[in-house]
Image (cartoon, rainbow, N blue to C red; front, side, top):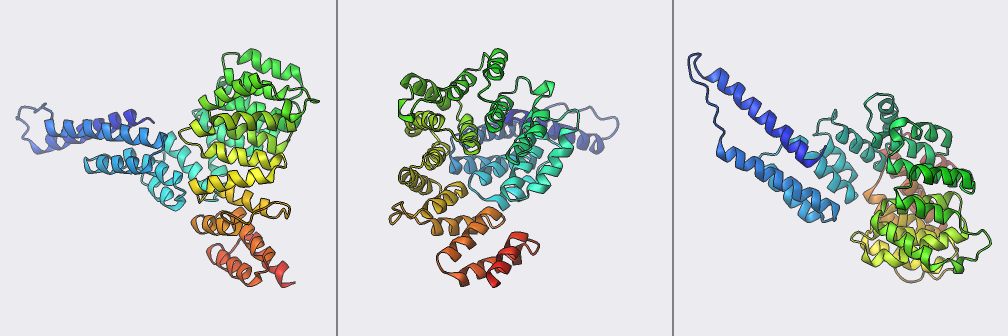
Length: 401
């Protein structure tokens, strides 16, 4: 629900409650008072303006401005349904997962936008099973929004259940959804069907109004024998323009290369991102992508440089911390300068104690650095928070053997 819709809904409830109170307070022969309190109306308009400012600041992103605008909206009488979802988004962007969860619980869970955000927060908090159960029930409902269907399909996809993902994405209501199109192309790359020109041609025929689809197809159909450094400049420029306009596509393309890496495609995406990264208002996604692509290309020195830049911008990025840890395991890479992988993992593990991939990586890093006592202590702390954690238990048994 947009900020405008939430504001209208709140004002309608406000006036409804006012009329109910007046009805019970006045004598039966009194003349109804249909006037609107000017101060209340001014406050409502100010609430609307503050929520709009917060929404804009979140998109930039400018966390301080967003929090200030939301505090002002709350002071002016904004409802929890208006403030909580936006506040939760700010907390989630700052990697404050538990705070985001507490905030979103204050909003009406029956609102589709709130329900979707709740599941995104659950995924960030490591509560994947809970999110998948709710999304599974939701996609079976007739009025399920396309965003929820796409999220469930993406979870199926990254688990390797591409058939289940395809079934969701083939629904009639998903035909013209741009994110669903990205996932369909990603699945084709992942399953090896991307080289089938008939499939790609069919996608382009149906979605010819989407320029980004053309750029994706371009990245799929580069000559298999072309060397990475021979990627045509015009294709780099075209893809750079499209990725700058639709940065959501960046992660999709990189994920596809992680599942099925091909040197020429990696080179195309990497060069396109290098052209736009310094001009993006929020460059973190592009920085993470460049680092990942450099690592996939075997250029660990460049990957290390981009990881360092990213961690200075976002010290709690789990993706960068895990990648840095992987890079440092390569003894041929010079990692003597900058933030260490162990330090980065410690920061993220402290901020996100429920993320098992980070916790297990840190324990393994302690063991690799010949610090078994640190590893054992870390695993025991993890088990104190989550007594049923199988990975922590398994590692402790392995170390005791």
